[in-house]
Image (cartoon, rainbow, N blue to C red; front, side):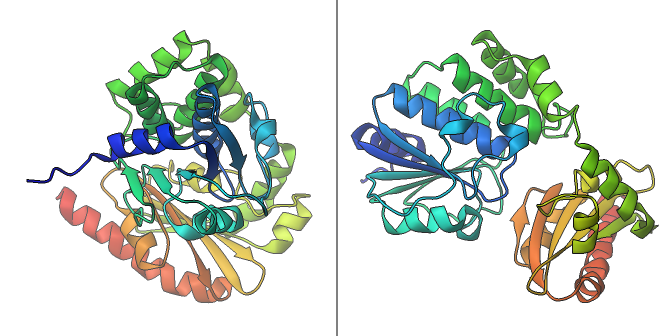
Length: 329
């Protein structure tokens, strides 16, 4: 009888035999994207692998404090690779232009992710939905292979844990999350510095953005939502579409069960961000609309005007709230 090789062993074998590795994470990267990418890249280099790390447009300014962030390239258009490792990226669209190049120019692909909506696009799919962050899976893979984490890799992975758990506050945080954080701190990662650099800072332009957007905030029957226009972004002095964490802020309102922020993009598109309190599944809603993510944090991009997208999404979000209320009854 033939045995099926575990994805952990398959990933370890692929890494062992690879000489050239392309490491990719998702567009518009967050702390877990950058942290898990740098954690795996640093570890592979310690194994004498030739590693190229890429994220479309590079690491964002607010995450350039992470050691090694300067090694992340903003694009790639040349080279062949024995192995591509994608981290924290649930589908092919999320890995962007750099990921598309890697898919066409890599002999094998490891898809390392923790999103339950992952589409399993890799040759090896190391997808662990129970993990609180991709950084946790990188930590476990490094241990599985038998490598030692450097201080800089530990800092990168702790950044991923801190940002994806919102400072160990989300419901998925468990005792093992804290054990991993402790192990990374023992390797030299500074929890206080990472918290200060990620959760406890905000550029003034985002304060201006919130000031402009707050008049659009509305709440009814547990659903709170807001809309950000391109003019709002321009007036705030920002050069990238962001909500500055507003969707996560709004879900903390006592009367809210689900929060949504609609962000107007060029070319008649709208980016939609969802957050929810425990018991309300916004991942299923995001998937229904062509996106993905976590049960309590997900998103999608839709064609149409702000008004058209809002009219489609808001009734569906109320259905999510009704389903959650029924389950809690």
